[in-house]
Amino acid sequence: MESQEADKNPVVQRLRAWDGEAVSEVIGFRGETTVVIPRERLQRAAGYLATEPFLYFSFLSDITTVDKFPLEPRFEVNYHLLSIARSDRLRLKVRLAGNDPVLPSVTSVWPTANWHERENYDLFGIRFEGHPDLKRILMPDDWEGHPLRKDYPVEGPR
Amino acid sequence: MTTTIETPTGAAQTMVLNMGPQHPSTHGVLRVILELNGEIVVKAEPVIGYLHTGIEKSCEAKTYSQAITLTDRIDYLAPLSNNLGYCLAVEKLLGIEVPKRAQYNRVLLTELTRIASHLVWLGTHAIDLGAMSVFLYTFREREEIMKIFEYVSGQRMMTSYFRIGGLALEPPPGFLDKVRRVMDALPGHVDEYEDLLTNNRIWLGRTQGVGIISADDAIAMGCSGPMLRGSGVAYDVRKAFPYSSYDDFNFEVQTQTAGDCFARYQVRVAEIRESIKIVRQAMERVAKADGPIRTEAPGIIPPSREEMKTSIEGLIYHFKIYTEGFAPPPGEVYQVIESPRGELGFFVASDGSAKPYRVKVRAPSFVNLQSLPRLAVGRLIADVVACIGTTDIVLGEVDR
Image (cartoon, rainbow over the protein chains, first blue to last red):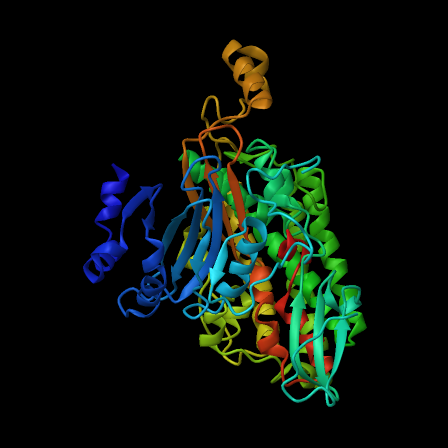
């Protein structure tokens, strides 16, 4: 019900008009709009959303991952975008298989993505191709494993 | 130390210096690897994670209510802001609205938190730059605000006073009088700090033109809060996406255009004055408002003690909520508030169980710190201290 309303969101319609295959699903929940986007389209769509004058999502708030283990596709990477000029928010979501957690980096679109992508690499093991310096950020460099994955215990031996 | 950094100016000319992780002016356990040409910074690389405690992972093992206590410890200079952000996120997930009286009390206390946090910032920043006495003054006033928190919640710092659906306890009698006393004295004290600093030649020399970031760069680097407003972007979550009835209050978004350390200082001092205005309005609204401090949602929000003792449903709900917790519908929400440091976001994902499936904290200091190299490169080592100071980082929040 709410998802059908989110479908009418002008941002979603613009995105769809720009590239029909960039939007594979639209989710509406509690007034927030989420656009599920195929991995191949992420970088181009990011560039479009950030610079298109009507949309102007020039501010990347956050990148975060949800691990659905043991379900597949295992990872959902969420990009929280903000348009300061229009006071609007949008969430992009990319679904990734557990055996292939690779994404193109969006640091060329939003330089702030640098540390966010490092954090997702560190804690979830998502690799971002084209990232200038992909290394751990919160855990020590020689740490083994990715602590926020669901198959990583909260306490006790790994 | 065996860290090697590529040197654009040739290895013979530069030296690598580790600032931190134990250094008084890095405000905790921040380490910055500086590459220096004489005293000029050629490259600066912040290294973080020394205070990483896995708060997001721990949240997944707690019920929604238990996780509130962890949010206090993220940004320990503004625990109530964190409580508020998390509670609003879970309330959004549940689809419940909090009574007005609780909302106004929340605004009152988070604005006091903002004042207290800015006072700590001002004092420590001034001490970093050699002005010892300001620190003693600001901590005197901060202590008065801490006493209010203790009076209301029983704790000076780790308050956990905001709960899902409202407040933990009825505010005690005489609470507003205490707040009023502090607020009446505070504007004069802020004048005192400004007398000491704003026209002080040494202060101006240390902060004006230092650590400049342009508006476009600040947006590209994801800066928020006073960092962004000091560069001339009037973005404040309280105005752009009002939460907790902030649209009922009159206040101005404070901006400066210079984008240097002095501009950020001016923004924060002006914000203290604005927050005093908001607290005064909130006091009036709290005094007028009546009604409950907690919303009614059987099975989600614990019943009052009276009800728990007298009705069988109340007793059952009390028992169920405190043993099992409650289960919001599956879904994901991202709730943003304006913390003293900027845009504080809570991303909470539910799988329909009584424990959050994922909690992600979008920590403003984490993102703001990322632009430190842009502020510091080309400046003297002493200016790095000023840049770290006006970025206003809290390492508990950076590392989580």
